[in-house]
Length: 137
Image 1 (cartoon, rainbow, N blue to C red):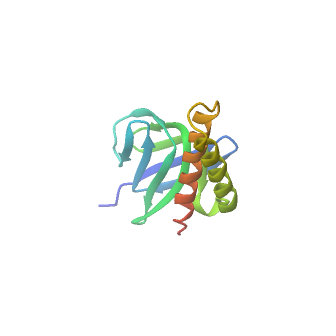
Image 2: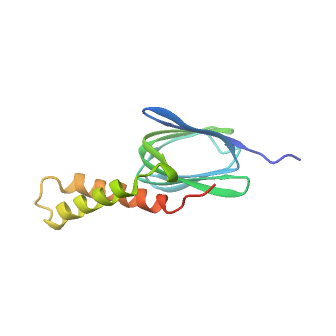
Image 3: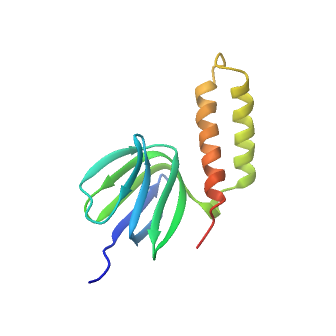
């Protein structure tokens, strides 16, 4: 019996980032991680800042995702992401600079008008740095 696959499409505002047949997908859902295998029930869910992992040829690959939606059918997962980056595409210097700026604003305390925006920027930068450390095949 042939191994079942699920088509994974990841779309960012400016491009189709990925279109691959994979064995498994793990998404950063707003309610927690969501594991998807072939035959998964139909679902539309919101995504948050986090790591999207997919297994291809028994190896997991990672991408940085920031906000979006996942549409899941039995044989296909479509990710529409505000930001989606492969590990090898992440600019480490820029991510470190964004992290430092966000930490500086957050250190001023909650009365700072930009506090929530800075917290989100910090989350994005930390996610990018974590994913960049997983460059692989």
